[in-house]
Image (cartoon, rainbow, N blue to C red; front, top):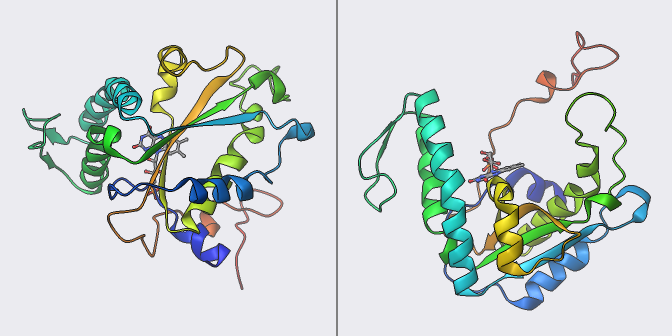
Length: 227
Ligand SMILES: Cc1cc2nc3c(=O)[nH]c(=O)nc-3n(C[C@H](O)[C@H](O)[C@H](O)COP(=O)(O)O)c2cc1C
């Protein structure tokens, strides 16, 4: 498909068909994704494709811990009412857009083990060479050697009609995930990408700020405009 179309419609897919994603499809996506840039061409990222039902179940159970905490905090913030049946199939939400996002996210979470593939993204952080570690704030520079290939992967899967959801909630449970999947010591878990054939059509429009609101020329008083 057209690159621009893929970029503009690659959403967080939270509803999947049960159909398997063939190895050839995954291989083709990784084969295209690998050309992403990373500092010094050190290529610090490794991927573990999890298909095994027992392993996915364990990952899903772990995911529910931070997800439930996130739901509780978000429900409070947006004054969303979560009824007593939350966490069950009968859960209902009352609210606006936040409600829709949370309801979809909740469905995604409770069906995590049923989604066809969970790709655990790992990275050798020592090989990322961050340049912002001495600034007295959170260092994020290392991520620049990690996430371009992850986004490439999502786009390369989108090209083949596969939906994805990039998640990081489970990263807080790195210790448990590493043990479960026997991930080598030198690797950290930096994201989890769920992938599968989408049960709903890809969106035609994603909700994002217009360019004028986040791109500026020379100073932050001058938005970039298309005249
Ligand atoms: C760094 C990052 C972490 C995310 N983590 C989660 C997550 O743990 N669970 C989840 O359901 N969605 C997660 N998302 C998806 C976002 O919630 C989603 O991109 C956002 O709501 C916009 O929705 P859209 O991508 O469908 O337009 C994450 C996205 C990013 C970029």
